[in-house]
Structures are given as structure tokens and as C-alpha cells.
Picture 1: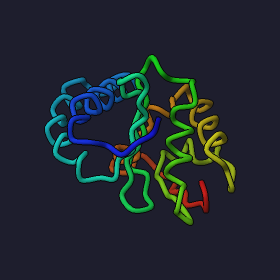
Picture 2: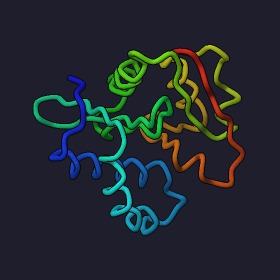
Picture 3: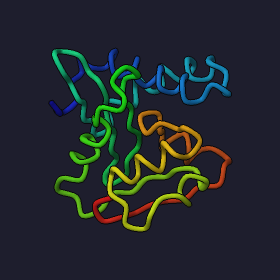
Length: 154
């Protein structure tokens, strides 16, 4: 079930964020992510967050800042079960468009009018980068070339 983030979700959501970043960015020292934990703890409740919960356990979450997808993460053991797609579908509700940033090497593989399944497939196909580990904030603040994607119903 998808629902809005609640304050008591913070520790579990933060654990998913940290684990996803450690797995997806093994080339970055773990201390970098661990050092950002408190900053992220403060920032998460400021965003519009949706969580996917099953049997009392949060399996994933998506953060929005207006129409911008700030990040989407799925617990490692819950990947490939459609959680990310369902979170993206929820983000589309009531919005004419969504935008996100991702490395240009991935953006080149995304069709002009892609749907969430196509986006997920493109991210998975590009070097095995999982959608669940995609972090728009990190990609957009890095020095890597970026592709901004804005689509009506991305």
C-alpha cells in the first residue's frame, strides 16, 4: 500500500536510503554516505514523500519537490516486484508533468515519451544501475554530464 510518509517512518526510510546508496555507489567511500546521514535525516521530512508499505514494513519510497523527482529507493530484498513503478505511478497522479535528472549516459537510452516501465528498463540496462538506487539529487549535483528529462506523465 502506498501512503504518505509519517514521522515515525524516518529511521526505516533513512536505512533504505543508506543501503541503496552504498550498494549503487560502491566506488564512493561508505563514509561519504554515512557522513550525509544527518543532513538527509533533516531533509527527508521536508519533501513530499510516499512510502510503499507491506505488512508493517516499508519496502520503498519516492520523494518529490513539486514536480521534480528528488529520489526513489526500494529495499534491496523487494526489488523487481514493481514497487518502484507503483511509486512512480502515484507520483504522476494529479500532475501534468514530472522531471528528473540522471547521468547523460542513461538519458540517451530513454525514449522521448517513456513511461515508468521504459524508464526502469533503461536504468536497469545501463550498466546494471537499478531504478531503486537512482538518486536524482546525487546525479544532478555531480560533475558527470547530465540529461534532464521532463515528460508529461513520465
